[in-house]
Image 1 (cartoon, helix red, strand yellow):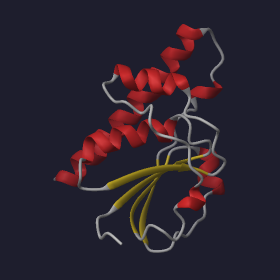
Image 2 (tube, rainbow, N blue to C red):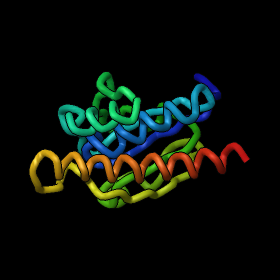
Image 3 (tube, helix red, strand yellow):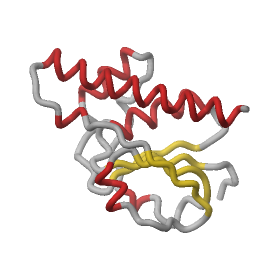
Length: 144
């Protein structure tokens, strides 16, 4: 088992917000952390608009897949648990085995936004940019 710290990003469906955060974290932290994302009720696939707006930002998440949080319970021993939605915060296990710092960042779910394609893309971009900014602030604090 590696001693490298982990980042686990958790939301409900693991199809949008947590997938975007996983991509940004991988880009931001390099090999300092092992990065994962998961959901409490994972969807069958990563949302295509999440893949599209992340590609616009220069990050390819097309190879990522939604995963159930149970894939990681008891398998990762330490690191940061980032919860990126209210529902996952309510349903997430309060205690993960090992040593975890829990961080709650509630972002709107762009998959629930109603509108035409351009309006939906605008909402995905807005949430993407919020996630990127939060990760940049966190990463700057880690480097200080």
